[in-house]
Amino acid sequence: MRIPVYSFRVDYVTRYSAFNPLLLFAQKYVFAPNEQCSVRKCYASAIILIESGKGLLELNGTSFELQPGSLVYIAASSVHRWMADAQEPMVQRCVYFDWQHVDRPAFQYQRDYFCSIEACREELISPHPTIELNEVIHSPNIQLWMSYFNALTPPPEILSYRNPWDRLQYNGAFQTFLHQYVAAALKDGARDPRISRILDRIEQETYESCERNLYDWASEQGLKKSRFHVLFKANTGCSPNEYVKRLQFHRIAEQLVCTNLSITDMASKHGFSSIHYFSKAFRLATGMSPTEYRNKYGAAY
Image (cartoon, rainbow, N blue to C red; front, side, top):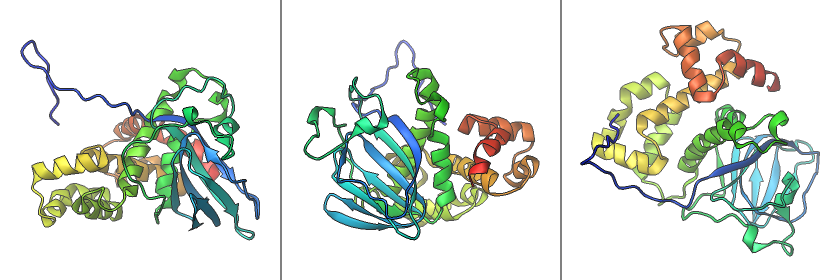
């Protein structure tokens, strides 16, 4: 990977962006049968995964039927209401965030971020970047997305503390998640269709297949290596190899939770030469060792 090297005679252009997405809170919400919330707005933006169950979302005048694997984007100040199914009520994984920092010193609880339409205060609404995202998409790989939510959701014991250093790990995991989500949810025309087809292929293939065939798939789309790298990063926020590597570790996280495969066998399955190297690489990607991750999240499945 090429990196910029600064010296006395060499300098590089830097680009300022007012948008620096910040995780506010994340949670799992279990609806009761027929549960409904009132029509409301949220000062922050939200991404919600339907983990299980069914329900209905009314969002800015449009109704969406939701099922397991639905991923919902609710932009800040959007008018919305949730309605759970009577027989199979929804279970949601939610993350609320600001695209750009908004000072809200009076907010102490999660409920402070929600308000009625009439009571909404414009100065507290998080600004939105100039990207167009689909409000609802569907992914068949629920466990993969749940592994993202597991990594970005702070445990209850740190929720009441405002020490920013405790939250660095979770905000970092959130920004990685947001890269992946934006790549999946961009509206047609906002993403290069050739990159969309390659991303769909990556989602379906194994890590080893991606490593071997990634540039062949680009070539099939008429893209040379250098152009492929430029377009891929513009559409996803990271290089092709970084994207595939991140996806590999989220798949490993999924298998740690959903299978009984030993850590040693899992390291071998994913091509790591030693369990030490596997554990080190997994900790670097998730902030936890494979054993810690399995112990923390395995009981939830």
